[in-house]
Image (cartoon, rainbow, N blue to C red; front, side):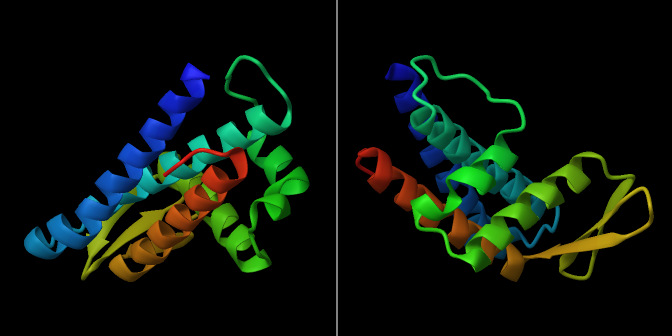
Length: 153
């Protein structure tokens, strides 16, 4: 139980950091590299929510990182947590973008965007509008998870 509380505190912290950087810090200093940090915080919150769900649903007494947890979550539990098809698609997009970001050959700033270049020379672009959409999705997801597992936000 204490481990779950720690996960929830970490999720709240990640969402607060992402929110503050998105709506206060970024508009003030306009540094595009901040978008990657915000994206990392959003991804972390989503990943922890999924870990909580899987540990809760699979009846584990000990919280642990479950390998290949994303596939199990999307195949078995996503609809149970109030996610519609568009939200599921966006969560998968965030997870795949994080993989590309971590394995990226190069990332650079152009105009008001961050461009992530993968090994096969495909590009993905992050801008403040996309970050705001991802942040809103992560917050909604956390609220749904909190309601379902019976914690107060």
